[in-house]
Structures are given as C-alpha cells and as structure tokens.
Amino acid sequence: MKFTASCAELSGLKTDSLILPTGSELSNSAKVVNELTHNSIDSAIESGEFKGKSGQVLVLNLPQSPLQRIILLGTDGLSNQRQVKKAVAAACQALNKTQSKTALWVSGLMTDNLEAEASIVAQSVNASLYNYKKHNAEKSPNLEALTFWTTEQSAIQSANSGLRYGAAVGDGMNTAKQLGNLPANICTPSYLAEQAISLGKAKLAKASINTEILDRSDMQKLKMDSLLSVAEGSEEPPKLIVINYQGAKPDEKPVVLVGKAVTFDSGGISLKPGRGMDEMKYDMCGGASVLGVMNALAELELPINVVGIIPATENMPNGRATKPGDVVTSMSGQTIEILNTDAEGRLILCDSLTYAAKFNPDTVIDIATLTGAVISALGKVASGVLSNDQQLANDLIESGTQSADPVWQLPLWEEYDELLKSNFADMANIGGPQAGTITAGCFLARYAKDYKWAHLDVAGTAWVSGANKGATGRPVPLLMEYLRQKSEASSD
Image 1 (cartoon, rainbow, N blue to C red):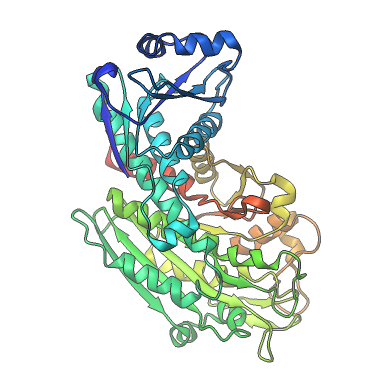
Image 2: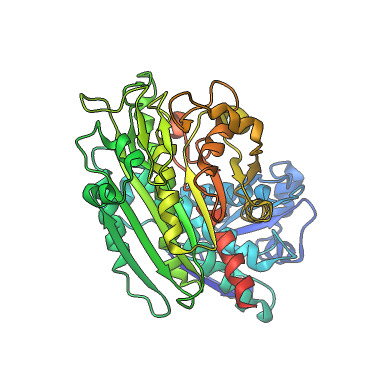
C-alpha cells in the first residue's frame, strides 16, 4: 500500500473513491464536495439516507459527477479514539467492497490532531486489507494507494508522519494476525523461530536486529525446567526465541517484551474439552504480537532498544507429559507444584522473565493469552493489565487510550498471592477457582521483582470466535504506542 498526503484542490484530484467524514451539518470540505457533485450530499441528507451519525456509512455512486463515488462517513457524536477507530474501520470495509484501486481520504475526523487521524486511517486501511487466503498466497490487494487530503500545506509533514506510523502498525498487526491464524501443524515452535530469523536478516539503515534461537539443550543448561516441563508431552521441540532490536545507543536500557507462544494448547494431561479446542492454535498470540511489534519497529526504525523473548512450545499429553501433582524447579530456583497442566502459560513465562534480567532492562512487559477468567471480567473489549509499578501501569493505560487498544488494571494484592500456597513447593501454579487472572499475575510477579514489570492478559482480545473467527493483531497498537511515547520521551 502506498500512502501520501496532499493539499491540492479537490476538484483536480483523480480517485476511484473519495471518503468524506461529515456530520449532518456539512464541514467546509463537505460543502466543496457537495458543490462538485451537484448537491449529492444535501440530497442524501434530505432524503434521510444519511443522518451523519457516528460511524454511519453511505456509498454514493455518481457516474455523471467529476467525483464518481463518494463514501460518506458520519461523525456526529464521535467522542473518543475507540469510536473514531470503529468509524474508520466501517469506512474501510465499505471501501474494500467497491474494489477501488485508489482512494482519497478527506481529513475531518479529528480536527485537533491531524497526525493521529492520519495514523488511524493508515493503520485501519492496512489492517482491513488483510485476508488469510490472499496473504498466504501473496496476492496483491485491490486497493493500491490512498491519498490523505488536508486543507493546509503546513499540515502535510504531520499527515505523512501519521501515515507512516499507522501503516507500520497495521503491517505489524497483519504479521501477528497471519501467525495466529495459521494452523498449529504449520505454525510450530520451529516455524516461529524461522520467522524470527527472517526478520533478523532485515537490512536497516539506522537500527539493527539480531536473532538468537535457544533449543532444548540450551534451556537445560540454563535450568529452565519450568518451561521444559510444558514441552515434555510434545514431539515438537521447544524454542526460546530472542530478538534484539537496537535503534538507540547500545548503553540505553531496553524494553523487554516477553510473548507467550504455546502454538497448540491441548491442556496437557488436564485435557481441555473438545469443543472449541481448534481455537487453541491462538494460544501463541502473545508471541505473535511481539513479532508484529518487531516488524513495525523495523519499518519505522524507532530510536529505542527493544528485546523480544518468545518461549515457544506445544502443550500435549503423552507418556512423558507433566502430571498434576508434579513439582518442577524454575530457572530462578523457586519450586512449583503443578496442580493443573492447563495453567501452562505461566510456567513458560516465569523462566522467560528470569532470563529477561540478563538484558538489564528498563522495563519488562509480558503478553499472554493466559486466562479464561479475564474474558469473564473484561469480555472482548479490554485486555487486563497487572503491574508492580503504578507509573508503568498508568503509561500502558494511557497508550491503550491513545491507540484505541484499551487495557484495564487489576490488583496484585497480597491476599491474592496467598492463594498460591502449596504444601509441597514454594508455590502452586494455580490459585483456585476465584480471581484466576489476578492469581496468575501474582504468580508471574514472583519472578519479576528485580525490575519494572507489567503483565498483559490478552486472552479476550487476541482473537474473535464465531463466523468472523480470526486473530485481531492486538495488542500491537498498544505496545507500539507505548514504545513510541517512550522513545520520544528519551529523546527530549
């Protein structure tokens, strides 16, 4: 996709489709388009076809007009970033149905922040063009170019900056979506490692990417017995993927992103019910989001250091599989009584969090489809966030608001941590039937005491079920917004 910004006269621009945000009271730009198309917008409003309400979309085909197709997008009542993003997504869906190769987006959704509007448009357009079958077959999408139009020459630089950032985030989301949607017999731990190695070969002018893959023997030497216990029942060899993106000075402490990648989760000996088990290929979406972020960082060459750690394994039942009641010793030396082998994500994350300390991190954020309990608490709207540093939690909440990829904070109180007590080890891997998301966070917090840490539970937001089943690419927008703000703050 090619994105450009322009402030040329609307009457002189050629395009297959023009997208026009407007309310029932026409903006100045809408008045110009209305005049160019012989009062077509006035007619749509007067007939009641278009009311201008938030997110309403109406396609006007005008073969006798200089602008032969207009996609009207309602703006009345838009009040936050989530609504704006939802409205833009609706316009993108309508645009794709027209089979247009070129499009012109008239700015006007966010008059107080043109760069943010351009970013949302580019991100949403790229994300909307994702198609599993087309993406897998490497076919070109119908839409090839979009021009973002603004009234002022002075705004072109901001618009282009927003387009570049949003396009990279959209590409990162599509990377995460494709990896999540691939079947588990293709997207194995080894496949994820191959994708990381390919990314590590990217030629960057202002940054560098180095990838290291640790195999079973490497993890054995590191005494990652908690992580390895999950892999015991699988024929697929586990991998610990380490991607080092260096966009800032070598001595600048990195942000470490730890992404859970259970490429298929049967539950192990604590076998899951058969219904819906196919969706457990999505249990690697945390790891996929880290690869998506790395892809976006490579496009943008953001001036920040980021390390991605992706523990990748299957969780399967066989004669060697870990059993309920077994006790394993984590890399940190802490022992864990495994009461439920389906609480495996925290077992691979805890060793990865211990390993993260070797990078002397500024901050560590883990991303995991960890608990069904977070879906009961927050549904499919917000991801859960728990943190041992309130400022970090606040920053992630703010980044979620700005990126329309929201999170909601849950507590890490000692009363919840006490639920992890075990008679036979330092802790159990589950805390009982109550507060499952919080006790999982408390478990991970025991391995993150030496640095600022946050845990994102994305089990409710990383994919959708039903007729539109598929990975969402979240929380790539949230993480990229956090990294962007952090890189801007360090450069001030």
